[in-house]
Length: 174
Image: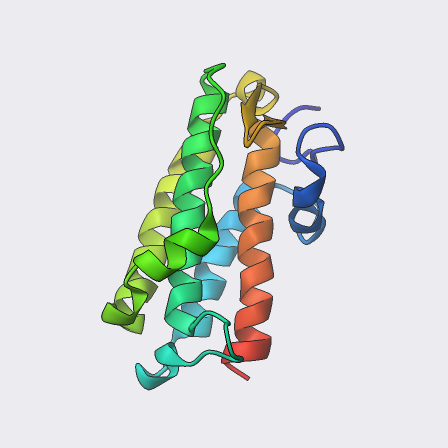
């Protein structure tokens, strides 16, 4: 079966994404993405603006930087998903998160504005994912000089969110 319920296998994504894919439970990835949208909002409910500027260690991102990184990364990966699902064979470049975060001006944002932005971006991702046909799920392309399938990108999006939600709960909101 080649649909939203089939876990991507080795070869559909670069090995360094294996940790993200492993963090996603088996099942329909669309349902996982919908559940995560609610989970992120629930986790951010009641977080003070002062807490948003908290970094859990020297050289670590603040809560607001981490949230904006999640949003930015989802946008990048959703764009990759669109291109691969539409059979665009153009190799897609990587991006340097460590350069993006300092220039994101996350400190000028509010936790509330980021809590509004995440579900908007996730809603767009969900609209794309829910529109994919069975053949679109198995299409492959190249991103960051590595082969990747549409299905794998959807799982990577969910795994990246899961990874950062664990950090949020353990390091920022504990």
